[in-house]
Image 1 (spheres, one colour):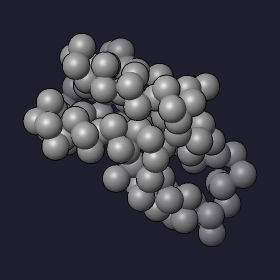
Image 2: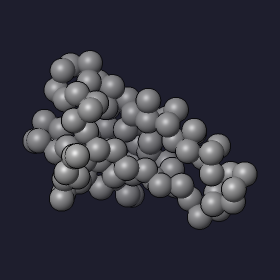
Image 3: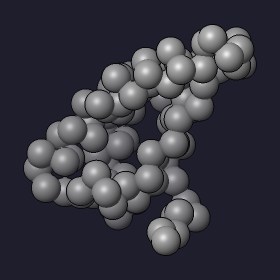
Length: 92
């Protein structure tokens, strides 16, 4: 099995403009875990930054733990799949 890193980059209250640089800097510093949520509104910027890191060979996708969360209003059975799919698309 895999061990989840104890420390992750948290992205709550990070603007879309700021979060890209933070994600890249965190990966450059050796972080292997990124935490976000759909409600933070920055998943798309995080996805672009991760793609940049993957494409540059800084980290492989299978080496990274990426956590996101669905918002409270999306916990109904009919909303969960849609919410997860939207996050997956934004995160790449």
